[in-house]
Length: 160
Image (cartoon, rainbow, N blue to C red; front, top):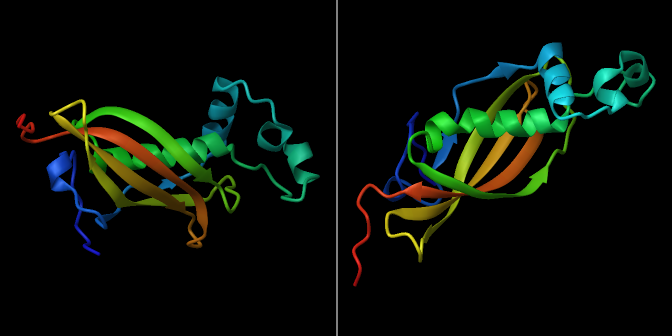
């Protein structure tokens, strides 16, 4: 597997299956982060917004809303993957959250290229499948997802 340094906005031709990126941006989760995502999405789950209910749960504390963790993981990856080269995200698959995230956890993300496919309908783009993973400060995996994206080609493919 190839390991490459920090890069931004890579075109379809610039990727190879097995490329890996350790994203430099790390983020410590705050009470405000969790409260904002919960209220913006109208999620009234007491585990996310009610300290007393969360203390009485098996976690003993506020559990960070999983949609925040997922969105942060994808967002942190953009600068190194698709910034300026994305045509469209085509889908997210196999989202898992094997460990909880709590207020005060510091999260980091990694990306690996799993698949590259020619676009049959767009000669100016190709399809890239990214596997994004996020870890806490104890190196526990807290989120994983596949993201399929239509990415610009540096040189549009010519018709045969």
